Length: 111
Image 1 (cartoon, helix red, strand yellow):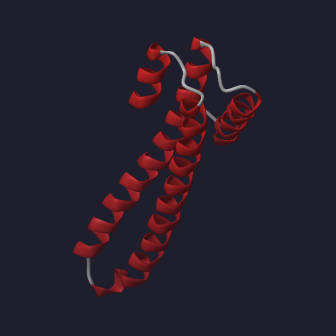
Image 2 (cartoon, rainbow, N blue to C red):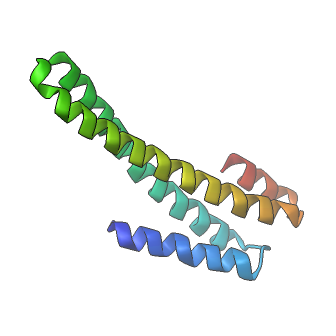
């Protein structure tokens, strides 16, 4: 999936939640998939960068400049992940604040 499509999906779901917090089953699933995809791609990037960092540490001292670049990217990915998680928590708090039915509550808490 293209990163822009995933971001558009998240933005669309934010609008849906802001318009009405009583989501249908399909809307709940779309919200979950949107954020799962966005977070999943960042987690994959973080894992790759962490592996790269470990390999560079094992190399000679010439790789210190690469370590700095890798650390900067890791920080960037971690900040993005934190922002995305904060974003979804705000939405879930808004939805749960409206006291959805028990089935919906379980879904949101699992999310």
